[in-house]
Length: 253
Length: 251
Image (tube, rainbow over all chains, first blue to last red; front, side, top):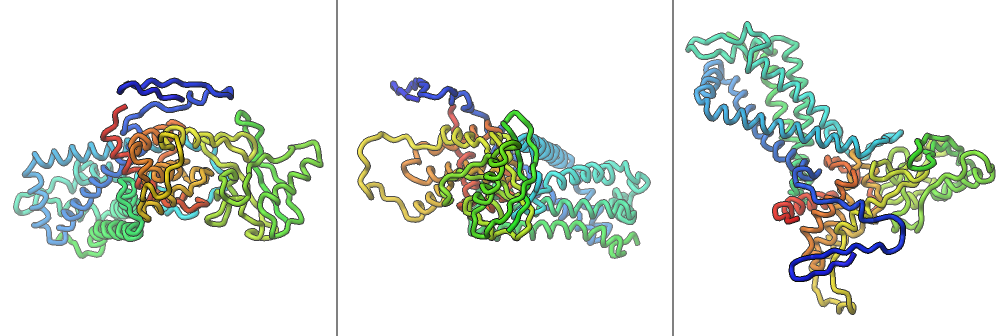
């Protein structure tokens, strides 16, 4: 290939030099950032980061259940009293969640196509189980979000506990929560899903930094350790609530 | 030592292959893995009829050319860390072992025959941008262009990549990120490669995606099998370079 530069205009002349195959027919054309595999990963990392922000904020809100029914119901009433910011946050979350999901499945499609014939003998040298089952844990989280919204936000599951009001006339969210977790099926499902979320995050948090290019080798181990600690903290924080209900620490009386 | 080999046999990239079982008898521990397979090949040749020789690729036999491949018992380049298949010896196995030998598996690496795959996708990634454009002429004076020691070391760490493709073979997603990032980082770190740094990463990633390689999910299996120990820190660097270059992309 010769490149003749005349002023700022470039003229490319392709010359076939020997051989029969046309080596240029395989060369790619430019692609947009968001259609590239790296771009899609960056979207996964950024949306993942924002979703972790939500998970932490939601945990802080939930842990107020340990402060008693009044505080917890007042917090819920406060959120309802600011519908503007609440709906902006809700719509933002839905957009972020959908982007995260869309890119996950879009990348999975690329990955499945990249190895049409699989190995007969599979071996894994150092990849963590969390990193290998991101899609599986992710699908569990998706199902959980649907069930969780149907349960505590929309009141489709256990509607008999949904529309109670407390002594102050506020929506009795505390009552709904305790009744929900007294049901062993809902409590078990909740704990299982939160553990899956923890596993998802134990890879996701450190992976996010690698994807965004913030990964100095000397901090990599510390970062992975910190990611596991944060994931474990989030998991334990969420699980403590159904466990406290089961252990009669958080009660209706 | 005696071994039972389960080897992938495939006539060409159109046909579908299958595993065939062979016995490798009277193997000594100091034989290399390829010597062991060649003893089987000699027998297959003597027999005349049947499957014929097992096609495989190797060249330098000292782990620097990147020609040899093979996925042995599910691990690219076999059980030892930091070596290519040609540096693997039968002392790494136990007498009587069953050994499964497969070609590198990726859509971008079609099987040419048996255990030989076409890795020209890597050549095209290099063609897309893995070079520096310089005026030819006399060789520049030594030390005419001072380069910091740590920069030179980093460039050399990336430049160690021999392009064998084990990273793609080992990656659960069939991704070529480790290879591409090593090439991008090696040239990008040096002043000679700096002017084309943005253009290079964009074109090489475009080509990598166009070849049908998978995407990275940061599982680091590539790093574990890389015979040259290329670090996944170069993948982080390529991600960074690609994001920055995308912001000012002109084509």
